[in-house]
Length: 188
Image 1 (cartoon, rainbow, N blue to C red):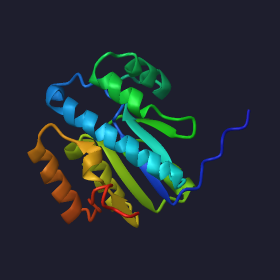
Image 2 (tube, helix red, strand yellow):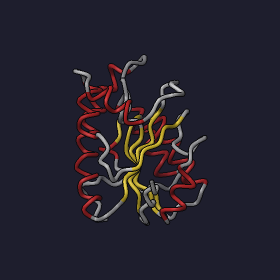
Image 3 (cartoon, one colour):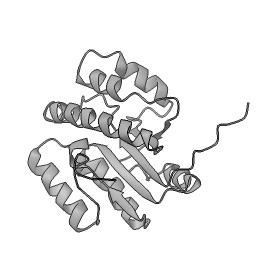
């Protein structure tokens, strides 16, 4: 069996931790904004896929070192709660690339950097959970790696509080030099 070739894509959408059990302290505050962010990310993903932008899922493995992404998606899709609704909305398509991550940043201890290099990625679009944790840490690692652009549409991310999200968006804009325009406003 020949492995599938990695698609060339100068822009890549990275969906971070949307496939999520939402069973940690504070998850009750994150659930509603996470669902709204997932709905916005679905619209953005559809638009970007029409533009032939590749999609990469970077998701926590939740400490299950023998897990695989598809089994995790199937498990959460069967849930009759917010985590299940989000998983059903954002389940990967056969074209999408998936990887599991052990910590906050999608770059830390993963093959993401190698994958993006093979894809020819120069610009990243980040969406996911939580704005002030995994999204921000991924944006910081992208900044350190010198990507030409990192776009974080705020409505495609969620945090436990509006204040935490706003502070993180400001930090990504001011310090990490991310584009934080709304996907609805950005003509990209």
